[in-house]
Amino acid sequence: MDPLDSSVSHRNESEGGDGRAPWARFSSWLECVCVVTFDLELGQAIELVYPHDVKLTEKEKTSICYLSFPDSYSGCLGDTQFSFRLRQSVGRRGPWFGEDSYNRDAPITLQRELAHFCGYVYFRQVKDTSVKRGYFQKSLVLVSRLPYSHLFHTLLQIIAPEYFEKLEPCLEAVCNEIDQWPSPVPGLTLNLPVMGVVLQVRIPSKTDKPGGSPVKQAPKENLLPAPTVLPTIHEQDLFKCFQSVLIHLQMLWELMLLGEPVVVMAPSPTVSSETVLALVSSIAPLKYCCDHRPYFTIHDSEFREYTTRTQAPPNVILGVTNPFFVKTFQCWPHIVRLGELKMSGKHENQRVLEAVFSVSNRNCIYTAYKTFLHKDKILIKRLLKGIQRKRPSEVQSAILRRHLLELTQSFIIPLERYLASLMPLQRSVTPWKTPPQIRPFSQEEFMGTLEHAGPQLTSVLKGDWMGLYRRFFRSPNFDGWYRLRHREMTQKLECLHLEVVCDADLLGWTKDKSEVEIVDLILKLREKLMKARRQQLPVKEGVLEKLEGYIQTIIGSLPEDLQTVLHKH
Image (cartoon, rainbow, N blue to C red; front, side):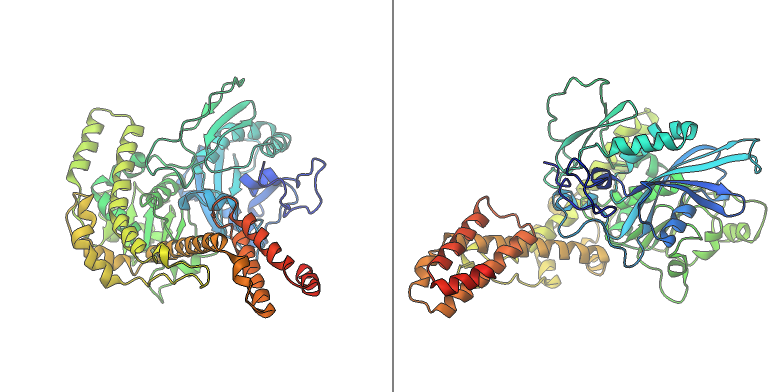
């Protein structure tokens, strides 16, 4: 059953003829599709939004306009693809109410965005003498809450060239096709038909083994045309992104782990956005809990907030291409420079660039940061040898991804192990008392475990691991990780408590109790039942039904007048 079939569309309250909310399946993949063009009088302007009744605020429309075109300095001729991320307007009522079943089952790094939109852009700029400016300039933009960069850019490669030839009727047909797609359900392999092509994708699940091979796919159907299988829906080509800064890989990983403010200065929005997304993914399966903007411009609504000099730079990664930012961000603690920023003429920013950066080195990192851990020289030699032997980029990326995964896991496993020790013993959970409390996290107590159960058990890297942990404790990433784990542990305790309550002789307990005590028990059991359903707690099968049965049996043992009151409420 499609989990969204019974949902209420945020665009139209009336249901379609098939009992499904209009655009419900489309909404499970995309918020909308936008066409942004260049208007001689207005500059960048939204030409079309589809579906037509989508609700974007004026602020969101303006942001999408500016983020959908490369800076004029980038000189992007032909077709260019890149990504952006923008903050939703305050007070916007999102389409996902309560607990989202997708987010419950998806890996933490691939959950649906609740406060931001992800934009995927296909920009075309070609000479056109029929246009006053002499150029055709237009962007097709997919706006979504899902961080499926590879899937959506593949989709754009199929539909954008066709759209630029046939315009709106083509776009309407594509949107209708997407509205027939099955919703993204973690763990399932889906066939997604669009414009005569079938994309076959597997939606990752949080039960997948990190770094492992995807679960075996079901036997292939006899589909015509044969599906195009996408090996991933979200992963970047890590080797392409990090090749020019390989010797700094250890530093970049630590900066991401600690949520440090980083600016990526790149020659194009493609390089900028791919690098920022690769950096964010480098600490997977740990979620990067700070803000990140794959492509950031001077027109961004957060421009003032992120460039003020009256306070320390915020915990954010910004990808930029405009030389203006060279001067604006020269006091930021960590600047990653990739390639050569393009300038028009010799102006002040060029002089600042030459003063701040060594002109001889086009790919480098400007920072005073000293890494806590030593570089993995064996990894760098292996990758450099791969370049000499012309090893395929996907193989180099797989080596890099495996290294970063093992590094992150070596760092996280001691924390996970210590956190598990804070959980109350299962035998201390009894039906007649509220669930016991999880012990508070003690940094010093954790540090005491590292000597015998630290990262050295799984990693050969030497260095100041304890110093790295102490710095990590002050980062937003630790706060996000701890909050998530604490919530999961609390829910596990709730589940254990529900199970022991169901195994107890509740009817026997009521035999010598007063009516007030029995009614109090019924109300408490009802509250637990409602909470479990509202939070979709992962209880064993049949537990909630069993508890509901107990409640009804206990109510049936009371006088009729009380039964009537309890059934009404």
